Length: 394
Image 1 (cartoon, rainbow, N blue to C red):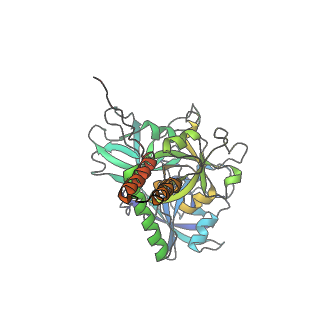
Image 2 (cartoon, rainbow, N blue to C red):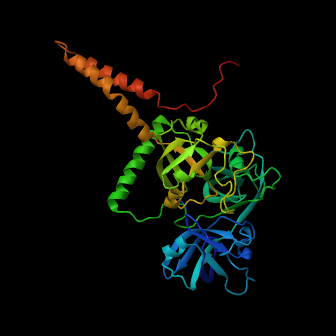
């Protein structure tokens, strides 16, 4: 995905900070309704105070109802009140009293969804728009039915102005809750600087190590292939909240080419984390059943298949600033898969070498070719097919 750049169409608002007691694993802010007329959220924003800034996610107060600790509606003339969660206040160094803060709010771009064309289906993470909107593939944050997703806008001549074509898969994971619920407009926002990054300062050695791991992963992925899957984030089971792992259905693990206990890479914007994926022991029952209503965590759509959901614990969402209502991209970690299979090849290759050493006049060239053939055959099953149909007969 292309790197996000600075927004060229945004507003900077001056307001007053008030602390909010709303729980959130990511930086969040509640805004007056008149500031978010097109969508109630989540909307990517940046909160600034005294030379410090942090990316955050904003929701309109109308989604909270009578929940205490939310914004009071303003008339648009006086400075609005921004209710910041504890995590947002800590990153800005704010205390408990009122303070003046600034809010960078990108302008929305609203579109109406139309069905995709069979002969030009959108790719994974792609959204087709008219050519006048963008001239080349451009990253955007899409918000649809209260769910955020990182997408790439691609221009197409067959898309009418004011409409957009998204894949049926992306439409399913961002569908509204309830069969009778009306589908909302698709709204796009320009990502702000720092949005979608694991924005913690790391040492030079840690950054170099992460770069080396990423480069090795890209090379191995080019050869062994690693299909990506867009999945709807769901609440994790209570016993997994402190873990850095994700749980998903067995069918989803098979589609990714992994088994329970293997490592996968979860991507959100420009941030990628490698975690362990385990099979979900109860993929159907929603965790939110019986809990207090939280509009930042909408229930899973009735018509969405369970294998399209991935349970992400709060500890992992906090690491990459991932909102609960989001769509992430998941793929297998080819580096960890290769390491696990290389360990299983140690015994057969070592046995071949020891057997050759026992001979009176071993042919080491032949033994080396045999060891290479054994390793190649053992690793060949790691390469996944392209899943493209091949016509055998006209």
